[in-house]
Image 1 (cartoon, rainbow, N blue to C red):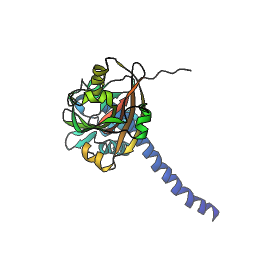
Image 2 (image 1 turned 30 degrees about the vertical axis):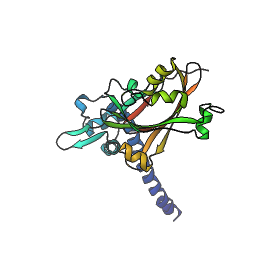
Image 3 (image 1 turned 90 degrees about the vertical axis):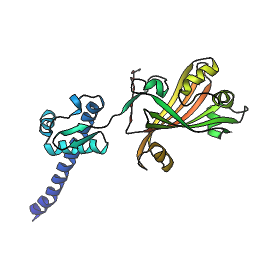
Image 4 (image 1 turned 120 degrees about the horizontal axis):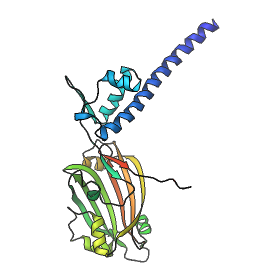
Length: 257
């Protein structure tokens, strides 16, 4: 009896481990294939047959199918009857090791345009005044909300705060076709210097999802960035929500010990 009870308990555990292992392998394979998809590593955008992928990566055909299901859920690939699995989506690279505007970053991939949804002077919220070092100065900031598109495709929703002595010049600037970074350098007469950034994943609220044409509750990449002029003055505080299915963040990091 004890041996039978042991077998009764052991069999479900072993089966669960096998299922979990297959899920782990599928996720690992999806990570490897995703990079090739994003870097256009498959000729003509056609992935190898499932059997070939299984042989190349040493996994079962079921594991391959689960991995491809994960990529389909990300809208990166699709199964076409009579053809196979083809690449249908793309993500655009956004560098994290250089201080550049979106149009500068993506100039090789198309034209970035900005829909200015809101632009007006507002009283500076306390956290904004603190980050922009506005204590004892003009209590107003210029608030700008822009929907940014690449060749018409919604990519990000940018909320920007700029000190009013600089922002006053932006009211008459061409924000629809020009990065704010370039305008700030022209207005202040000095180059931008450094930026502090925080990157995290957040769920899209109803407003952001509607504007970005993204499913409500879908994950978006939130980039908070405080940009300084070359003399160290903070001049631009931004909260940028990127569609996570259309942007990938890349950077080159150096180890220092």
